[in-house]
Image (cartoon, rainbow, N blue to C red):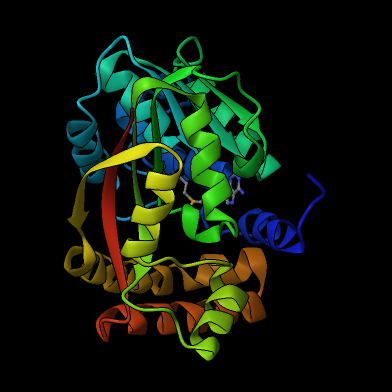
Length: 280
Ligand SMILES: C[S@@+](CC[C@H](N)C(=O)[O-])C[C@H]1O[C@@H](n2cnc3c(N)ncnc32)[C@H](O)[C@@H]1O
């Protein structure tokens, strides 16, 4: 697939994200922990780039009934926090795929440092073009990433293809309660690189069309609104480091975009949910 400018824009966005593998290694060192002592227990306080940290991964794992013999695909795996946590907690084998090369390199370095590279690996690639065999996985997961992806019917059809019959797709995503006003959609794309925020009803249709039967949808909107208000405050508390690393203009642009995003949660325009679907 030739590269869509929206995909290039997402990669750029994550190349300059305030949280990076180096920033995690620095935060761990600042706790007085040497590189050789890094373990998953240490990393999990720093490396989860979704809403709700490891508690959200625990909920996803319970929803998916993850087992040690699952072969898991983490779609849009970022720095690999959920993938490592899953493998560490359940003993399952996890493959992550992410579009952004620096995220994949960072995820691999963190996984190596945590001693989990025998069970967890990462590939650079586009979730719209999964480079895996048919029926290669028993479970696919994702957290807070699909809103970046422009063609969701193609996304969920590709995931269905790589799942075995009976395999599960369990993911959480940013949703809108109704189609977004054009100005909000534009600002969410310009500020956060969300190229397509879906409604729950649209997801239900796309999943069904891809042969994935919806088992349950859990509304997370209220919880996420509280979390996002706190995350925004946390971002502001890192002002000094972010300005030093990425410059004032970058800090302010992201701050304004985040304010708009959080405002849409507060006013009930945006929502969030955990989906559980199963391949027939
Ligand atoms: C908010 S981060 C979530 C990372 C991870 N799921 C976590 O919870 O820590 C979103 C990730 O989606 C990735 N991404 C966005 N569009 C993608 C695509 N089309 N294919 C693969 N990865 C993509 C970005 O590079 C980024 O690392």
